Picture 1 (cartoon, rainbow, N blue to C red):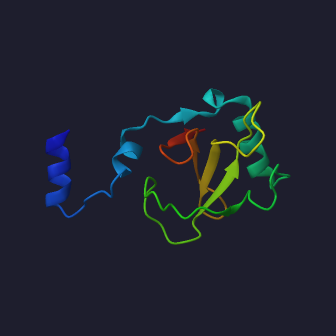
Picture 2 (picture 1 turned 135 degrees about the horizontal axis):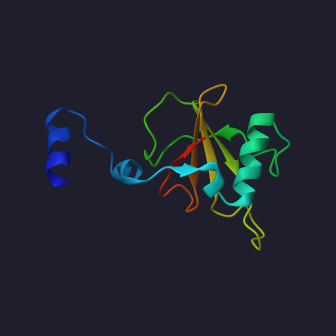
Length: 118
């Protein structure tokens, strides 16, 4: 894939460090999400309630630049509970748009994302 990165560079479409991981990731279907993820996705579509009301629905700033670049406030994040973990854990669903029209899943605290296909 080195030639492809070179082509992107020459076209002026350089990717930020780490962004390449997003483009190489496969998508995930709703059925492939863990049960907790399926539940959170449904809660998002229903407007709640959420396990962490002060955090869930907050702006995700995409500092890692692993999702396509958008204006601030475009992305929102929601906690996907992890059984046996006392804190929020690493799993999240990040939505894009208002109302949400894009959905992404990460199970490694924003190191990689998979687009949720419905």
